Image (cartoon, rainbow, N blue to C red; front, side, top):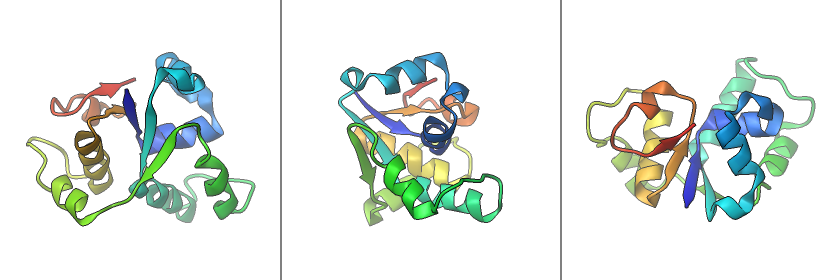
Amino acid sequence: MKYVLDTHVWVWWQMNPKKLSPRVRTLLNNPDHYSELLLSAISAWEFSKLLEKKRIGISCDPEEWFRVALEMPKLRLVPLTPTLSYRSTTLPQPFHGDPADQIIVATAREENATVLTKDSLIRQYKHVRTLW
């Protein structure tokens, strides 16, 4: 099974895994339980914006943080392609207007993957599988 990490799941896994649900923490602790983890490139941008707005702090160079955070077992960074950009804008409605969430959900749909997320708006969306 493939999983797309919502931005907060990726960040929490790196910085405070106790914030994750027991199911998600157990899954991420056991690479044998998944075939691949996917991270949308938009998540790196979202993390950078959190740093910029001082909503999150780190004690190392951000580029070093990214290098380490992208070393998760079986992790693949999914680029934002023109096709994926378009598909994020044509999701079956209703879906909310957050562009990053739209891209993450479109990535999951394109990759036939389940989104790991605490976000209730994504979890309520019936056109994508989620796990929390």
